[in-house]
Image (tube, rainbow, N blue to C red):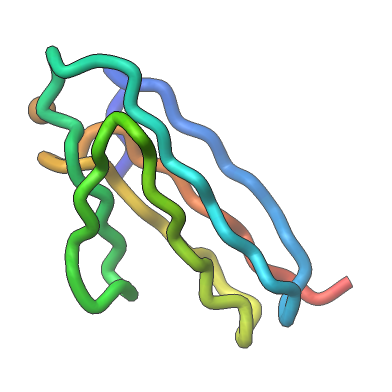
Length: 81
Ligand SMILES: [Cu+2]
């Protein structure tokens, strides 16, 4: 469920493309220091230098992710054509 308190964005891409998202954090004054998705094997730390996360695009489906604590929810919609 989206929170109205934090910004969110839905992006789209075509299935079977190689897609990498680069997450960047610009402050230490935040608890948003990890990236996690239900389809990721584990949480990824989000250092200020950033982290690249490959998006699984084999199947057309939404790929959602959040940053720590469930804040800053976003998703990539993977679709055919
Ligand atoms: Cu938080």
